[in-house]
Length: 359
Ligand SMILES: NC(=O)c1ccc[n+]([C@@H]2O[C@H](COP(=O)([O-])OP(=O)(O)OC[C@H]3O[C@@H](n4cnc5c(N)ncnc54)[C@H](O)[C@@H]3O)[C@@H](O)[C@H]2O)c1
Image (cartoon, rainbow, N blue to C red):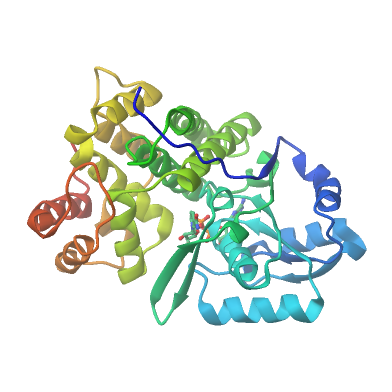
């Protein structure tokens, strides 16, 4: 066995259908008495319901979270937390809402209680991102790691099917890259493989019956595992490409992950054979389809976009800019990435643009 360092992230997870009923005890454990509830405008009703449950312990609701945490919004939310004398934030929603709680925690140190309703996984990471002047700055800080996470699959029953599949692919991307991470370890590899398996099992069932509580439980369990991998080990080419495309062309987060993943995995496959075997085992395609092809099929067969041209916001001509950016300050990757690989990356992006199934 190769040598490794394992650095666990502290955090309490309460999981199960109906787990939201334990909210009050969890707030007590955090010793919080003035909770600021955060959500997107679309989930305001859920946020109000949660605040209603907390009664006098809810200091207020700030239902204005948006994708990528604009700095001006982060400052307004911090000011609101200060004005209300909040001693905790509760983020109910996806990565955008958890991201806003993190921006508050970064400056005010308020503990976060997260109630994730997508599969993005931000609730399990000490990573934050704030966008200023069109540039998203990311960093790591232990203060932004949620203290408590309540995973209640019942809250995801109405997550639209399209977003359920792309968000699930986003989660799988964390696990897939975690399997070849430079700082990987056997615990994260187990979690990654199991996370991919759980999500891949859940997707067709959710597509058939969006309110299937068992499938929603599998998917959220998978999202937890994949998010844990994201929070513990470094990401590589796939995440670099998605950050570049998402940041530069303002493309939707989960869809970009869905389209790029098979191509990034195919690109790295010859340099990460054990990771490919684990992905194929998790997807049940050993001997029949490569990891890259199997990921492509998983997205396509569940109705998700598989071509950049179909998600809009980017033209084929833009891919040259994206390729230039992707080889600048590259992340560590099992296959070397640098100016000499610019043409290979451009080819990868063209294949993703047209939705060509990788071998
Ligand atoms: N810091 C990290 O570790 C990390 C990890 C993953 C993602 N992110 C960030 O998170 C953001 C993306 O998060 P996301 O993909 O979860 O999208 P999101 O949080 O923007 O949610 C997408 C939309 O779905 C709605 N929604 C969420 N759950 C719902 C539900 N159960 N039912 C109905 N509607 C629901 C939301 O209100 C929102 O309108 C990006 O900014 C990304 O960079 C950060």
